[in-house]
Length: 166
Length: 269
Image (cartoon, rainbow over all chains, first blue to last red; front, side):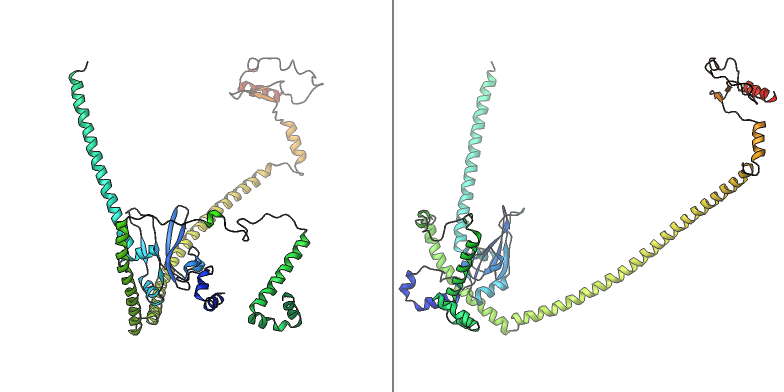
């Protein structure tokens, strides 16, 4: 089947290929891809970092997975850590030798782990998070100030009321 | 065309493989023809029962408008983010490309320097052997420890069992002795038993010295014989015994001694 498709692509002219319905994505076709495979169960996500033969073949099923090169636990643990395990040796093999396509989430993980440079999305994400935290802090400060003001007003009104209890 | 394929199949079954491999289209037609024939046959046999249709859209129908005209909108991003992502992605992609090269070179270098996969396999095999040896050593040590432990346990168990046997034997011995004593006592008692030989004599003795159990007894142990026992019955015993018992016990008959005396008196009579 696969060879037939290849031969079809080879025979037809490029403009005809463009008009054809795309059965495969040429960018990823036949190229191993490294991605996250969702394991785990209801309300408990858990990912395996896996090498797939082809992105189009899907990534949930063990049957398609060539090799597992790591795990990723997206639920923070008690110390507020998301644990990631990566097999650098095998990753280097798949990335360098086999020219594997790497999905963006895995690229971010690789960047944070130090094998790759930090992914651009990680920078943006960090910037957004910083802004969010600053916002929250500002809000907290404003709320504290409001509360203090209220408290003072109450105290002053209470003092007046105590001076004239009747 | 289908017919042609089937004819070929019937005429030369040996050629089927080659035909299938050489002209896939013909093979497909043949398969389709056979499957179709099977389906029709089964339907005719089953008289076309009503079946639940399969879930989902029949493939012959066009995609629904909702699916057909669905447009994927990319999430909105801040312009400064887009700008930053652009140059960052550019640098990043370049870095990734060169990193791929670096990794490839590293793997090649490792392989050439005897640190490749083959070397790793050999090293792992060696390590595996070493680990197995270590495991064997551990197993040996554990076996020795287990044997000593088990021998001690066996000794202990043996001692306990022997003790139990000793206790049981002593108990049985005592029981046997007790039983012998009982039997001896029974034999001694049996000298006064009634048997065929001394039957007449015993009957005479009983007649001479009758023991009367027809009495009432109170807590003090006084026995009240009503009517007074007689050695030899005279006349016809009364039929109406109600009057006999129509008396207050303990007033007429006195105490046990008196009763005994009365009994004695009766015997003397």
